[in-house]
Image (tube, rainbow, N blue to C red; front, side, top):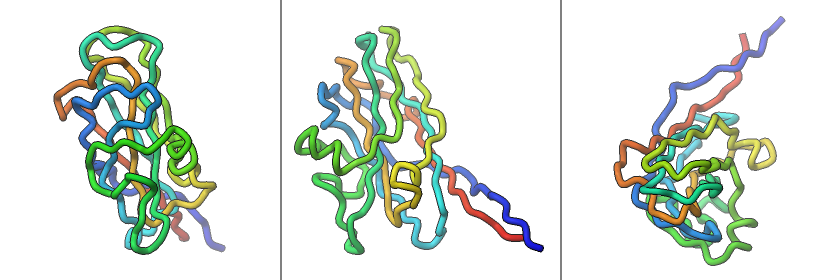
Length: 168
């Protein structure tokens, strides 16, 4: 008789530069990560977690939204203005954002305290795509705090942990 057990890979850093990113009232402007290629690891899921740090005197009751994107084909082709490299991007419209990317998690900015860290608990990328982890995927972060995000790169940390099943 075999036993199936879950196993976790060591956490890996997501290449993204969310420091000094301007506020976006409709969340279309933000920053994307470099795409993560799952073609050799073959994880069944990836858990994304991170820390985003506010800038100086953010507006309370605002949000930081973390979206996940995936390739459309083998080229790979990514949605809209997403190109799979860590860079600032502006999605064409809120409608395209809602249909081409998946909302992974939301952090509520509940204080106007400057330089405060907000944490996102681990979120399943596969769940965002109906239970299947895409071959190549990445994150897109946007916020509507009314001020630029904190300018220190080390104050923003994003990681993922691959998930596999093993048979013993």
